[in-house]
Amino acid sequence: KLQFVAALFDAIENIALIKLLLGSQNGIYSSIAYYFASIKFAIIAIGIIYIIIGLLTLLFHKELVSE
View 1 (cartoon, rainbow, N blue to C red):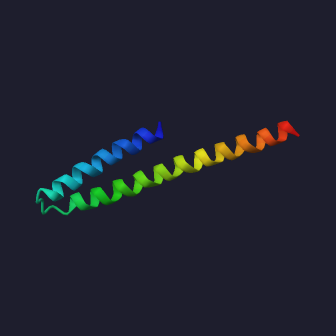
View 2 (spheres, helix red, strand yellow):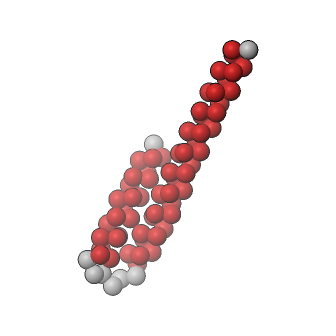
View 3 (spheres, rainbow, N blue to C red):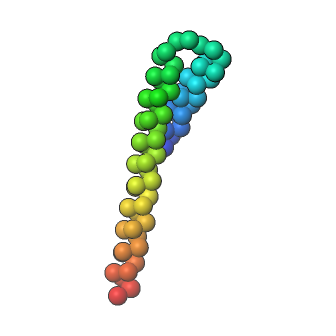
């Protein structure tokens, strides 16, 4: 579910970047893009760490069962 939040943050970041590319001089768009991208990548990193921990747990559990 958290990855869907990351996708939403990506969409918001993209909208802010498009506004900048279209020539907006409003500095709020660069701040929006920066903060939403930072949070998005933090969420993605949390997801990757979660997957790695799950895979390691599965691997060690299989080793303990097979012994």
